[in-house]
Each structure stands twice: as C-alpha cells, then as structure tokens.
Length: 373
Ligand SMILES: Cc1cc2nc3c(=O)[nH]c(=O)nc-3n(C[C@H](O)[C@H](O)[C@H](O)COP(=O)(O)O)c2cc1C
Image (cartoon, rainbow, N blue to C red; front, side, top):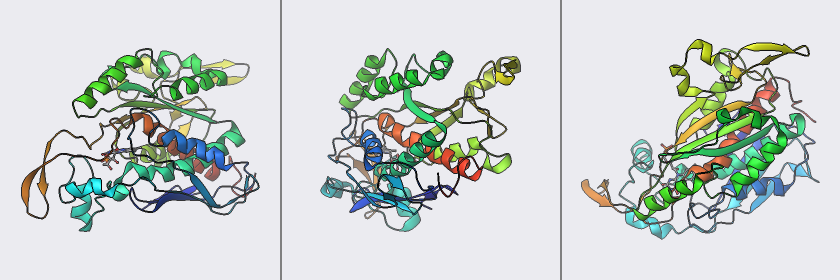
C-alpha cells in the first residue's frame, strides 16, 4: 500500500537510490491557486543539507510537475510531481550489502520479500517522504486557501534535553496568526527546528553524540490551527485515528500523543476536563487539554499533537549484526551519509501528513467542494 487518504488521495513512489521519487495526488478540487514554488519551498525544508544536523548527501530535490496544474491553478485532474535522484553513492553500501543494519528495515524486508534494495534502504529510506511532502504542500495550500488553516511543527525535546517552549506553556500565544508566523521564522532559522531558549544546549548534545559516532532522537509538537468544529467522524473514522495512522506511518516515529497525551493519565478528571462558558452567544472552552479533538471530532480549538522520533538507526559506531550469505555473526560499521538526528527533517513531513489528513476529512465531510473551488 503506497496510497494514503480516501477523497484526497496521495500515492507516493520511488526509492533512495532509484532514478526518481514522487507522488500522484488524486482528488484535489479544481481552481486552487498554486505555483510550483509553493511545493518546492516545502521540499527545500525537507531537503538534505538544510543544516549541519542533516545528512551530507548532496541533493537539490528540484521538483518537476508533470500534470494537474495549469496557469497557476489546479485543473481537477491528477497532480503528479517528481524529483530526480542525483547524489546517490551506491558504492557506500556495497560493504554492508549482506549485513543488515540494526534498527533499519534491511533484515525485515529481506525476510519478508526474499530480497531488499541495500542501496540506502530502498523503499524504507527516509527519502521516500519526498512524496509525502509533495502531497502535503498541495493539501496545506488547499486547507489554508479555503479555511485559513495553519499547521506548524517544532521540536520540544532533543535527546534527554527538554525545551522550554510548547503549546501548554503558553496556549494564548497560538491565538494570533502573526505569533505563528514569528514562531515559524524562529523555528526555521534554528538547525534543530527548536524555538526553545536552551536550543544551544541541545546542539551540544547532538554534536557530542556525533563525536561518539552515535545518533539522537527527540519530540516534535504539531499544531493545526483554524480547523473548524466538526471535522472527523465517530467510531472508525475519528480525526485522531486518522492523524495517528498518518503520523505513525512515517519512518522513525515511535510514539503519538494528542493534547495532554500520556500526561493525562496522571491528572484528576477535574484537571483534565475542558470546562465550558458562553461568550457572546458562542460556547467556548476554558482550556484545551483534549488537544482540539473530542469523540473523534474537532472541537474548533487548535489540534495539539506530539510524536517521538527515535535516534537514526544508521550509526558509524561498531555494532553486532549477521552475514546473510555465510550465516555467521559479523560486526558492522556503517559508512555512507546519514542524518545524525532525524527530528528537524521530519517536521515538514509530519506537517504534510497532518494537512493531507485534514484535507481528506474536510472533503469527505462537505467542508470543501470536491469538484471545484
Ligand atoms: C526524513 C527522514 C530521514 C531519515 N534519515 C535516515 C538516515 O539518514 N539514516 C537512517 O538510517 N535512517 C534514516 N531515517 C529512518 C529510517 O528510514 C527508518 O528508521 C527505517 O526505515 C526503519 O523504520 P522504523 O524506524 O519506522 O521502524 C529517516 C527517516 C525520515 C523520516
């Protein structure tokens, strides 16, 4: 399965060292104003080399749109876009061809399919998320153009270092769109995409791990602001169920929380419940501990999501593995070019998946005309 969504459907394809990677987007209504550079800007945020903490693999990830956009607008036909791989160095992987990398999908793919593309992990590579970002850029544009929905992601923890900025430390901050723009700028200018004051301490933590030929994980918060009340459905098509499936499906994501998440199990009901009040005839919540979703349906408050990202599996520290040909134990020392930390690069990917999920549910729920804008 390489397709996500029911009504706004994104199919991704391609491998780390194949010729190209891309996406086909089906179900985007006609007349959405969008330029190639809107999608390119999102790809640039995911691109290797964006900071010292990303893989040194050299890729420009230049987008080519093949269909579905004409004179700056979607036509309602399938949108397809691709990026050619240019910086593959498949020789880097020949040394570990028969020695699966612990923590990566090499062995599991081999056992399931009887073969695997050892060059950069093939389809299990983080590079396949180029397709998610192409689809997500269109979805972001669609939900922002029709409902002014904004999605922002940033890291709140790197390795063992907790940051001092997250949604619950200052929920009022997220009420203003201009604050969100400022936050975006701050986040994008930080190599770990962390707006916390102690991000330098986090940088040192990652640099230290890199010195030790090791890697680091972290926690990301994603906020969806402006989503109207009523998106999502009871029982199997819950908004949080769809978002959970979208996020957990991304490589290296190991945990998912909504609102107060795991912390909610420590609270009393009286601390967790978001109490109501009436203000100028509208019913409001005093707090947003639920994270903008109750009963599978958006409440109209910002949707607050958190994911944990594991440390990059490919590390150059020597590890135990096996040789699949000789059937003997073997040490593995991984060369090649890898992200010492995946966290900053996965943020645009998670924002993309949030946008695709919301666009899909808003089309099926009648918030967006599926045919034309
Ligand atoms: C944007 C992104 C970049 C990644 N970069 C690397 C990398 O450089 N080296 C690596 O070993 N894994 C990298 N990964 C993680 C692997 O793709 C992932 O751990 C592997 O496929 C196993 O899947 P799992 O961790 O979800 O179980 C990256 C993942 C993403 C989403």
